[in-house]
Amino acid sequence: HDRASKQARVRPLATASLGGKPNSPLEWLQKFALTGCGAMLAESATFPIDMTKTRMQLFGQGTNNTARAGFVETLRNTVRNEGLSGLYTGISPAVIRHIPYTGSRII
Image 1 (cartoon, rainbow, N blue to C red):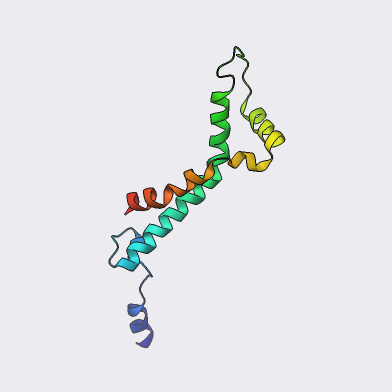
Image 2 (cartoon, rainbow, N blue to C red; image 1 turned 45 degrees about the vertical axis):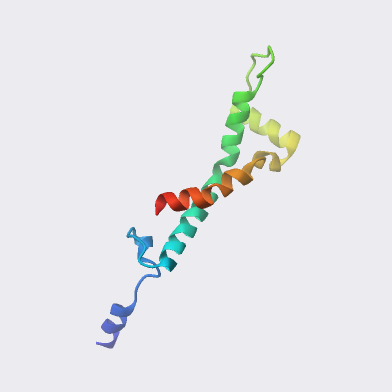
């Protein structure tokens, strides 16, 4: 009997995390923060791929050079010339935009 009443009192921290609408400002803030953090993490993980793709698209622009480097070669050249941090050049705006954009879009 005591165990059943204890289970009835236990609630998830935020019902919003279960797919429902936030019921309080704290739940709203929690959902906003968690979705923003998740999107920032995903952006950080995929940014080197996107950066490499963009460099491949821009390679040879403004020149007569029509030879194209492949994905792995472009990635390797970036790391060789700029180090690993070169794969993350320009990540700050991409990550920061997810705080308001993704958080407000999910809610």
